[in-house]
Length: 294
Image 1 (tube, rainbow, N blue to C red):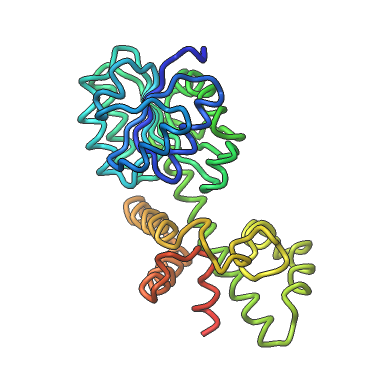
Image 2: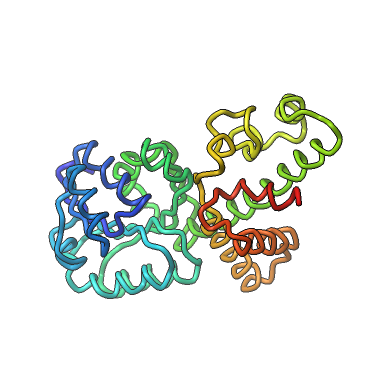
């Protein structure tokens, strides 16, 4: 895809803002819109042209990207802008939403003669800023190929997971694994502390043994062994606890809908709800170790 194409980016928050800025850095023409004036101003400072509305943003766009909080927001915005979207445009939703809403969004686009891709991301704010996100994509192979040059300006790994909704399915399953594994790692360190074992000793063993996982080696929930982890910054996110709980709740909704048994996913959801209720709304999800210690 030529970088002379016009891109509309709707949703310029902590993730969307840096993603749009990276598209500008890559040479794309980007017009953005966000309900927050401060987010829009920040995007303007990064070279994004500001639109007065979502409809205004999409009217000349070859590609429309949305990054929004939930399925209801994605469907609402798509319903609002599809009539204003020009023929032949590709819609890409990078939000993390439920699979059914993702499939409904695809159907909305198809009903207007347009094509779509669900492409949720992994990598957090740091990945958005550094253009190192992983994109998990659902949609037709031809649409994935068309979107790839755009996504590569914002990420380092682009995976086609299958047809409509498959990207969201992959994201939900991945983050359920993440939530469960972080609790396991936290429990391991909490037990090690009670047994008189140092953080570094457990890390040195587990990080090179059968307990090795991303939650340990990249995002270690105790200060010291991994200097870049949020544990070294009093658990400032990172990946905030409400976002982890949102993804776990999506996994449980999907499990119920599909008739799948996910007992550890259900327990992780319960524990993260307790952590959030304890006042952890501004804490990284790895901070759950404090609750597990007590």
